[in-house]
Image (cartoon, rainbow, N blue to C red):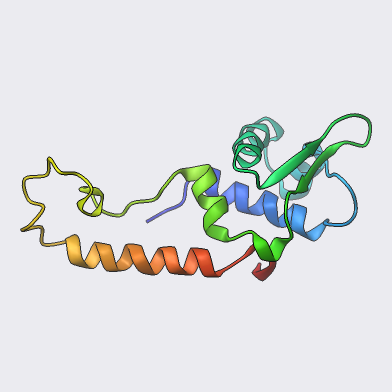
Length: 131
């Protein structure tokens, strides 16, 4: 399993906001410069993060972005899901695809289901504050 650049860069940007928490809004151009990322790409990511209520935008002079909650209250899984969508390891979506002809006889279903659960547990147990 590999996270796309959305997930990796989004985590980097959220970490940057966490590190600058309490210093006021941070402009995307500053995050882009510090993290060596594209500002236009960050705009796309922050649109998703804002929609998921993980960040707030502050308009005007001195504006930018701030975390919408305390870093200890933002699970890594929330960030990843906001940017990547729900991550599923199984081609049959772990039994949610009723049209799968091999649903009952799938050789990989049990192990992928177990891995999926472990990944979800880790992503929900770790917070932005843990980074």
